[in-house]
Length: 289
Image (cartoon, rainbow, N blue to C red; front, side, top):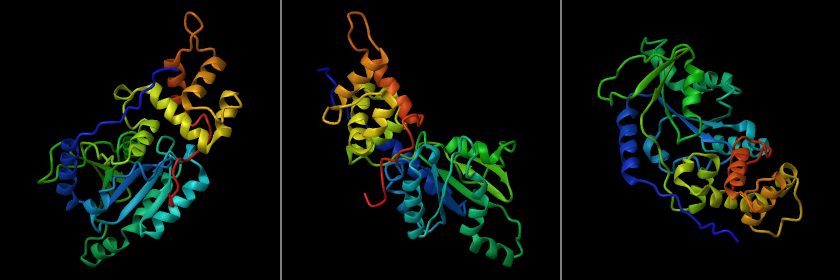
Protein backbone atom coordinates (compact mmCIF):
# COMPACT_ATOMS: atom_id res chain seq x y z
CA UNK A 1 0.00 0.00 0.00
CA UNK A 2 1.48 3.40 -0.95
CA UNK A 3 2.08 5.85 1.88
CA UNK A 4 -0.59 8.45 1.05
CA UNK A 5 -0.93 10.52 4.19
CA UNK A 6 -3.87 12.81 4.86
CA UNK A 7 -2.71 16.38 4.34
CA UNK A 8 -4.82 19.26 5.60
CA UNK A 9 -4.66 22.57 3.79
CA UNK A 10 -3.19 25.43 5.82
CA UNK A 11 -4.70 28.94 5.61
CA UNK A 12 -3.45 32.34 6.66
CA UNK A 13 -5.66 34.50 8.93
CA UNK A 14 -3.57 37.60 8.19
CA UNK A 15 -4.43 37.35 4.50
CA UNK A 16 -8.11 36.94 5.34
CA UNK A 17 -7.99 40.02 7.57
CA UNK A 18 -6.43 42.12 4.80
CA UNK A 19 -9.07 41.11 2.27
CA UNK A 20 -11.88 41.68 4.75
CA UNK A 21 -10.58 45.20 5.38
CA UNK A 22 -10.31 45.98 1.66
CA UNK A 23 -13.87 44.85 1.05
CA UNK A 24 -15.22 46.93 3.94
CA UNK A 25 -13.33 49.99 2.69
CA UNK A 26 -14.80 49.60 -0.78
CA UNK A 27 -18.41 48.79 0.11
CA UNK A 28 -19.50 52.41 0.34
CA UNK A 29 -18.38 52.89 -3.28
CA UNK A 30 -20.61 50.20 -4.77
CA UNK A 31 -24.33 49.63 -5.17
CA UNK A 32 -24.19 45.83 -5.04
CA UNK A 33 -21.99 42.74 -5.00
CA UNK A 34 -21.39 40.02 -7.56
CA UNK A 35 -20.29 36.80 -5.86
CA UNK A 36 -18.82 34.08 -8.06
CA UNK A 37 -18.98 30.50 -6.81
CA UNK A 38 -18.15 27.18 -8.43
CA UNK A 39 -21.39 25.47 -9.48
CA UNK A 40 -19.98 22.08 -8.41
CA UNK A 41 -19.42 23.21 -4.82
CA UNK A 42 -21.44 26.39 -4.21
CA UNK A 43 -21.32 26.03 -0.42
CA UNK A 44 -17.60 25.33 -0.12
CA UNK A 45 -16.61 27.99 -2.67
CA UNK A 46 -18.51 30.76 -0.89
CA UNK A 47 -17.08 32.62 2.08
CA UNK A 48 -19.24 32.09 5.19
CA UNK A 49 -18.46 35.66 6.24
CA UNK A 50 -19.84 37.23 3.08
CA UNK A 51 -23.28 37.87 4.60
CA UNK A 52 -21.78 39.87 7.46
CA UNK A 53 -19.35 41.67 5.19
CA UNK A 54 -21.76 43.01 2.60
CA UNK A 55 -24.75 43.48 4.94
CA UNK A 56 -27.84 44.56 2.99
CA UNK A 57 -26.19 45.26 -0.34
CA UNK A 58 -28.01 43.58 -3.27
CA UNK A 59 -26.19 40.40 -4.24
CA UNK A 60 -26.03 38.57 -7.55
CA UNK A 61 -24.59 35.06 -7.31
CA UNK A 62 -23.03 33.55 -10.42
CA UNK A 63 -22.76 29.78 -10.40
CA UNK A 64 -19.78 29.54 -12.71
CA UNK A 65 -18.57 26.42 -14.52
CA UNK A 66 -22.16 25.26 -14.69
CA UNK A 67 -21.21 23.51 -17.93
CA UNK A 68 -19.40 20.83 -15.89
CA UNK A 69 -21.89 20.73 -12.98
CA UNK A 70 -25.02 18.59 -12.71
CA UNK A 71 -27.76 20.80 -14.24
CA UNK A 72 -30.39 19.44 -11.82
CA UNK A 73 -28.22 20.33 -8.84
CA UNK A 74 -27.51 23.79 -10.27
CA UNK A 75 -31.23 24.42 -10.69
CA UNK A 76 -31.74 23.46 -7.04
CA UNK A 77 -29.05 25.92 -5.97
CA UNK A 78 -30.58 28.75 -7.99
CA UNK A 79 -33.96 28.12 -6.36
CA UNK A 80 -32.24 27.98 -2.97
CA UNK A 81 -30.53 31.34 -3.47
CA UNK A 82 -33.68 32.99 -4.75
CA UNK A 83 -35.58 31.72 -1.70
CA UNK A 84 -33.06 33.70 0.40
CA UNK A 85 -33.69 36.88 -1.58
CA UNK A 86 -30.59 36.73 -3.79
CA UNK A 87 -30.40 36.86 -7.57
CA UNK A 88 -28.64 33.88 -9.14
CA UNK A 89 -27.55 32.77 -12.61
CA UNK A 90 -25.94 29.63 -14.01
CA UNK A 91 -23.05 30.71 -16.22
CA UNK A 92 -19.79 29.65 -17.82
CA UNK A 93 -17.48 32.64 -17.78
CA UNK A 94 -14.91 31.04 -20.07
CA UNK A 95 -17.31 30.57 -22.98
CA UNK A 96 -19.66 33.38 -21.98
CA UNK A 97 -22.68 31.09 -21.75
CA UNK A 98 -25.42 32.60 -19.60
CA UNK A 99 -23.71 35.98 -19.25
CA UNK A 100 -26.19 37.60 -21.65
CA UNK A 101 -28.60 37.50 -18.70
CA UNK A 102 -26.22 39.27 -16.34
CA UNK A 103 -27.03 42.92 -17.14
CA UNK A 104 -30.83 42.35 -17.18
CA UNK A 105 -30.47 40.54 -13.84
CA UNK A 106 -28.41 43.43 -12.47
CA UNK A 107 -31.11 45.90 -13.41
CA UNK A 108 -33.71 43.80 -11.63
CA UNK A 109 -31.54 43.45 -8.53
CA UNK A 110 -30.66 47.16 -8.47
CA UNK A 111 -34.08 48.43 -9.59
CA UNK A 112 -34.67 50.48 -6.42
CA UNK A 113 -31.31 52.22 -6.76
CA UNK A 114 -31.93 52.95 -10.44
CA UNK A 115 -35.35 54.43 -9.63
CA UNK A 116 -33.85 56.48 -6.79
CA UNK A 117 -31.19 57.88 -9.11
CA UNK A 118 -33.84 58.82 -11.67
CA UNK A 119 -35.92 60.55 -8.99
CA UNK A 120 -32.86 62.62 -8.06
CA UNK A 121 -32.30 63.63 -11.67
CA UNK A 122 -29.33 61.27 -12.09
CA UNK A 123 -30.80 58.96 -14.73
CA UNK A 124 -28.02 57.04 -16.42
CA UNK A 125 -25.71 57.13 -13.41
CA UNK A 126 -23.53 53.99 -13.64
CA UNK A 127 -24.36 51.05 -11.39
CA UNK A 128 -21.21 50.00 -9.55
CA UNK A 129 -20.69 46.42 -8.47
CA UNK A 130 -17.94 44.76 -6.46
CA UNK A 131 -16.82 41.34 -7.72
CA UNK A 132 -15.75 38.80 -5.10
CA UNK A 133 -14.67 35.19 -5.44
CA UNK A 134 -11.99 32.80 -4.27
CA UNK A 135 -9.23 31.54 -6.60
CA UNK A 136 -10.19 29.56 -9.68
CA UNK A 137 -13.92 30.26 -9.48
CA UNK A 138 -13.63 32.49 -12.56
CA UNK A 139 -13.51 36.08 -11.28
CA UNK A 140 -10.96 37.22 -13.86
CA UNK A 141 -12.70 35.39 -16.69
CA UNK A 142 -15.97 37.07 -15.75
CA UNK A 143 -14.47 40.56 -15.69
CA UNK A 144 -12.64 40.00 -18.98
CA UNK A 145 -15.83 38.73 -20.63
CA UNK A 146 -17.98 41.59 -19.39
CA UNK A 147 -15.44 44.38 -19.93
CA UNK A 148 -14.34 43.16 -23.36
CA UNK A 149 -12.49 45.94 -25.14
CA UNK A 150 -13.28 48.31 -22.24
CA UNK A 151 -10.66 46.73 -19.97
CA UNK A 152 -9.01 50.06 -19.22
CA UNK A 153 -9.42 51.28 -15.66
CA UNK A 154 -12.38 53.65 -15.44
CA UNK A 155 -10.98 55.93 -12.75
CA UNK A 156 -9.38 56.03 -9.33
CA UNK A 157 -11.86 56.46 -6.50
CA UNK A 158 -10.86 58.43 -3.44
CA UNK A 159 -10.20 56.54 -0.25
CA UNK A 160 -9.57 53.16 -1.84
CA UNK A 161 -6.40 51.14 -2.16
CA UNK A 162 -4.63 52.20 -5.34
CA UNK A 163 -4.54 48.65 -6.67
CA UNK A 164 -8.35 48.43 -6.81
CA UNK A 165 -9.47 48.53 -10.42
CA UNK A 166 -12.70 49.66 -12.06
CA UNK A 167 -13.86 48.24 -15.38
CA UNK A 168 -16.55 49.62 -17.67
CA UNK A 169 -18.91 46.94 -18.97
CA UNK A 170 -21.08 49.30 -20.97
CA UNK A 171 -24.87 49.46 -20.47
CA UNK A 172 -24.31 51.59 -17.38
CA UNK A 173 -22.44 48.93 -15.37
CA UNK A 174 -19.01 49.32 -13.74
CA UNK A 175 -17.21 46.48 -11.98
CA UNK A 176 -14.76 46.83 -9.10
CA UNK A 177 -12.08 44.16 -8.90
CA UNK A 178 -10.43 44.25 -5.50
CA UNK A 179 -6.96 42.82 -4.84
CA UNK A 180 -6.36 39.96 -2.50
CA UNK A 181 -8.17 36.68 -2.02
CA UNK A 182 -11.43 36.05 -0.19
CA UNK A 183 -10.61 32.92 1.78
CA UNK A 184 -13.29 30.91 3.55
CA UNK A 185 -12.85 29.52 7.03
CA UNK A 186 -11.80 25.91 7.06
CA UNK A 187 -13.20 24.43 10.25
CA UNK A 188 -14.34 21.50 8.10
CA UNK A 189 -11.54 19.61 6.35
CA UNK A 190 -14.01 18.51 3.66
CA UNK A 191 -14.32 22.13 2.53
CA UNK A 192 -10.56 22.33 2.03
CA UNK A 193 -10.59 19.06 0.14
CA UNK A 194 -13.35 20.18 -2.23
CA UNK A 195 -11.56 23.43 -2.99
CA UNK A 196 -8.39 21.48 -3.72
CA UNK A 197 -10.39 19.12 -5.96
CA UNK A 198 -11.50 21.99 -8.21
CA UNK A 199 -8.05 23.63 -8.21
CA UNK A 200 -8.73 26.63 -5.98
CA UNK A 201 -5.73 25.52 -3.93
CA UNK A 202 -2.45 25.39 -5.81
CA UNK A 203 -1.27 21.85 -6.39
CA UNK A 204 2.18 22.92 -5.20
CA UNK A 205 0.89 23.15 -1.61
CA UNK A 206 -0.99 19.85 -1.67
CA UNK A 207 -0.01 16.21 -1.97
CA UNK A 208 -1.61 15.49 -5.34
CA UNK A 209 -1.48 11.73 -4.92
CA UNK A 210 -3.24 11.85 -1.56
CA UNK A 211 -5.71 14.39 -2.94
CA UNK A 212 -6.58 12.19 -5.92
CA UNK A 213 -7.22 9.25 -3.58
CA UNK A 214 -9.62 11.32 -1.50
CA UNK A 215 -11.33 12.51 -4.68
CA UNK A 216 -11.76 8.92 -5.84
CA UNK A 217 -13.16 7.99 -2.41
CA UNK A 218 -15.78 10.73 -2.78
CA UNK A 219 -16.65 9.85 -6.38
CA UNK A 220 -16.85 6.17 -5.51
CA UNK A 221 -19.63 7.00 -3.05
CA UNK A 222 -21.49 9.52 -5.18
CA UNK A 223 -20.74 8.82 -8.88
CA UNK A 224 -19.14 5.36 -9.27
CA UNK A 225 -20.66 5.02 -12.73
CA UNK A 226 -18.57 7.99 -13.92
CA UNK A 227 -15.34 6.33 -12.74
CA UNK A 228 -16.35 3.13 -14.50
CA UNK A 229 -17.25 4.87 -17.75
CA UNK A 230 -14.22 7.15 -17.90
CA UNK A 231 -11.52 4.70 -16.86
CA UNK A 232 -13.07 1.45 -18.12
CA UNK A 233 -12.64 -0.35 -14.80
CA UNK A 234 -15.13 -2.32 -12.73
CA UNK A 235 -15.58 -4.11 -9.40
CA UNK A 236 -14.02 -1.26 -7.42
CA UNK A 237 -16.98 -0.17 -5.27
CA UNK A 238 -15.56 -1.82 -2.12
CA UNK A 239 -12.04 -0.52 -2.70
CA UNK A 240 -10.23 2.44 -1.20
CA UNK A 241 -9.17 5.45 -3.23
CA UNK A 242 -5.54 4.39 -3.55
CA UNK A 243 -6.63 0.98 -4.84
CA UNK A 244 -8.84 2.62 -7.47
CA UNK A 245 -5.95 4.91 -8.42
CA UNK A 246 -3.80 1.81 -8.85
CA UNK A 247 -6.41 0.25 -11.15
CA UNK A 248 -6.53 3.44 -13.21
CA UNK A 249 -2.74 3.54 -13.45
CA UNK A 250 -2.63 -0.05 -14.70
CA UNK A 251 -5.47 0.50 -17.17
CA UNK A 252 -3.82 3.60 -18.62
CA UNK A 253 -0.39 1.96 -18.70
CA UNK A 254 1.19 4.44 -16.30
CA UNK A 255 4.12 2.24 -15.30
CA UNK A 256 7.70 2.93 -14.31
CA UNK A 257 10.75 0.71 -14.39
CA UNK A 258 10.05 -2.63 -12.78
CA UNK A 259 6.35 -2.51 -13.59
CA UNK A 260 5.45 -0.30 -10.61
CA UNK A 261 2.50 2.09 -10.91
CA UNK A 262 3.38 5.71 -11.63
CA UNK A 263 1.03 7.08 -8.97
CA UNK A 264 2.10 10.67 -9.57
CA UNK A 265 1.08 10.56 -13.22
CA UNK A 266 -2.17 8.72 -12.47
CA UNK A 267 -3.04 11.24 -9.76
CA UNK A 268 -2.42 14.20 -12.08
CA UNK A 269 -4.66 12.65 -14.75
CA UNK A 270 -7.51 11.99 -12.30
CA UNK A 271 -7.43 15.55 -10.93
CA UNK A 272 -7.07 17.19 -14.34
CA UNK A 273 -9.88 15.16 -15.89
CA UNK A 274 -12.21 15.87 -12.97
CA UNK A 275 -11.52 19.60 -13.19
CA UNK A 276 -11.96 19.59 -16.95
CA UNK A 277 -15.35 17.87 -16.73
CA UNK A 278 -14.13 14.78 -18.59
CA UNK A 279 -15.76 12.45 -16.06
CA UNK A 280 -19.11 14.05 -16.82
CA UNK A 281 -21.28 16.78 -15.36
CA UNK A 282 -21.35 16.34 -11.60
CA UNK A 283 -21.88 18.35 -8.43
CA UNK A 284 -20.48 17.50 -5.03
CA UNK A 285 -22.95 19.56 -2.98
CA UNK A 286 -26.72 20.06 -2.80
CA UNK A 287 -28.48 22.87 -0.90
CA UNK A 288 -30.01 20.66 1.79
CA UNK A 289 -26.56 19.28 2.62
